[in-house]
Image (tube, rainbow over all chains, first blue to last red; front, side):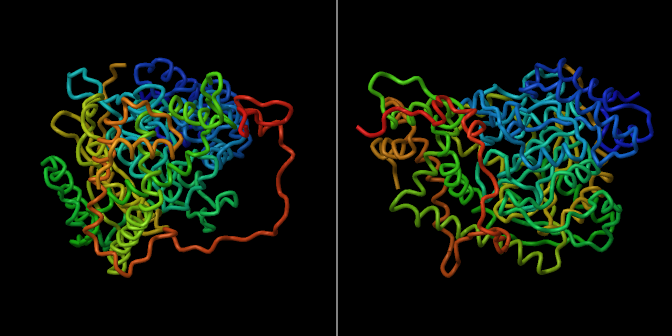
Length: 495
Length: 95
């Protein structure tokens, strides 16, 4: 029999409503699994008291027949979300000891929908990384291994703790955030589902900011149906975020009709990269065949500026980060360096930031400072923003041709080993996001769906990209792909 | 465009991040790698293309100009590394 912590959101929801289990039992099963999974380093702040209190409240609501969408379902929250009275460090030393006096809109929406918070999840510092190796808490570890090889693998990043926790059944689902691929790449590395919605679908209020024009929250789940359920609970208009869209939120689960007959699926030729492993190409071809078998029309398309997405991203994201992270000055919250006799306020800033930020964050803040500085603003920042306009235009032209969704690989490889990229230059790590970053630059929804295993037994994912605000259609297509791929593998438990 | 150690030092200063002198050569090297990657953008014809200001076309909402929040001094100060008498405390700013 499936253990309670191994259930999907939808199965647990149905079991709760049928009176077959209670939120308290589900929550306790997850807390037990979390306690036994220290080796994964996924949960970094544990909140069992909050969890049990919410579980008991959820059981009372269920008993009264007054159960909202996620009533009683235990989930994990990425450390990037501010949670009232619970440590929220964005994986950084500079926010050590920070206890928010407020709750992020997304985590509040989830609480209002009855979800039970189990704790906070590991992540790359300030969401800057693709391997969860920049975290102040140390690496999160992928529950998947290469066959019998006991080398530790990355769960991806930046939402690495979220991905590891969902894949290892420590929680039923988790929140993630995605600035350049930080939901979709870890989902692909762990055989889970992750959706980044259209920019503006989820409120950014109370989520520690990295690059404000790119950041979006989304769910990381065990199935596409779960992604639909949880996304609907997370999104909605929020007056506290001026970029939050004032649009009705569709019933995403109801959109999973299983029917994509006649839909046009675009296959962009620019996503066929030199040196891409054969297995990724094969997976992509398999995915194309599955969509075709389901009645979709496959159309070859071109997104000519794809190649320039990563370089544009590595101007725009650091520029915005350098501005957003200026607030960490040792004055209002978090860490302040111990000062020497005679140190003034400038030394306080410089020492605090040198001690509080890790190397990757420092690197990006300084790159951002450089590209925004006098004399370089036009050459770098404005040029990158112009290229961004062209990248978005590529997608607009394709959608204007009647393309409903675009199918691509999610990542250029399977999960790599922790430490394997240590000696590589920073750009080599950035290439992880080559298939995902265009979607953030264009503000589009994108979803990673597990579609197969490589020859070492590691999961591989495919990505579907949708039209703006068309998450319902995107989830429907993803659901069809998921059913056709029939991915059911789970990591063998070693932790 | 190549970044030398003095430029790296100037950027660190602008970013208010203390970098020890012996770390500057490696830092300048990393900057050059990243900027070399970014240089690809020079291949793109951007003539007549406007810089993106908003990824989704939207008109910002307006509201009445009135106080909607406030009187939360204790909460505002609760996370300060050093707060005294209702203020944030910092080292001497003006000599």
